[in-house]
Length: 127
Image (spheres, rainbow, N blue to C red):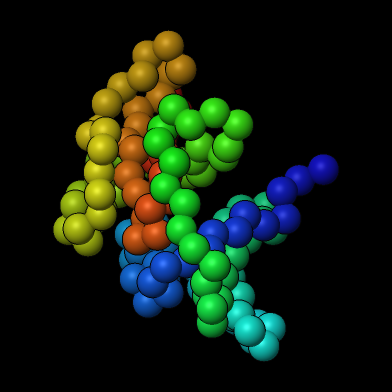
C-alpha cells in the first residue's frame, strides 16, 4: 500500500498554490473541474499527490488546537535543507510557530509552519 493523495480544503486558492509551488517547491500537475468544486494537484513522491479543493460554497471552518484529540494533526514534508525552507516561509509571510531546531531524540531538524489555510505542516530533515 501507498498513499495516493492528501487533500486540503482551501480558504485561498491563489495563496495556497503560490505557497506549495514557491515555498515548498512542489510541481504543479493538473486541475479537474467537478462542477461545484475544483481539484488542483501537486506532485509529492512515489506517485502520491497533494490535492487542493476549492469549493464554490464552503460549509464552514475548523480551527483545532495542536492538542485537540482524535483528529489529524499535521502533514510532514522531508526536505534537504530545513533552514532554506524556513527562510522562504518567512519571506512568504507564513505563520511559523516553531523555528528551526534539532530534535535529537527523533534524529531530525525541523520547523512547524501553517499553510495559507491554517493547516499545520512539519518540515524536516533526518540526520
